[in-house]
Length: 130
Image (tube, rainbow, N blue to C red; front, side):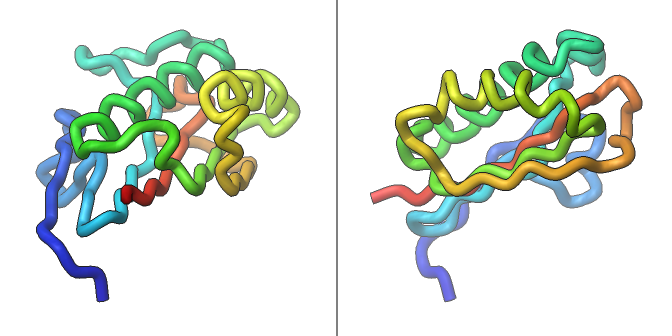
């Protein structure tokens, strides 16, 4: 059982009312929910651009981690879901720009689609703080 206070970062997206947070920290563990390249106005960031959407997802994740007192260096796991696995190198290039020296455990999977058909990628992350 994890001990420690619970802190949450909202996504400020339409699905927050169904019981959703962008990220949750309990003790030294942070879980970041599946993150897509959604702009605050609801539009898709970097339509049809796998690299651009990956960067946007990672920037959103890093902002959530920062709000919970963590950074990229604390990330121990990422899960990357793509709608077209043949474009994995585009996503991998953006992932390497952030995590190339950190090298978290990572999984990359192909899925059929996301809530908005404009999303090409969704990323989850797990971080552990000192």
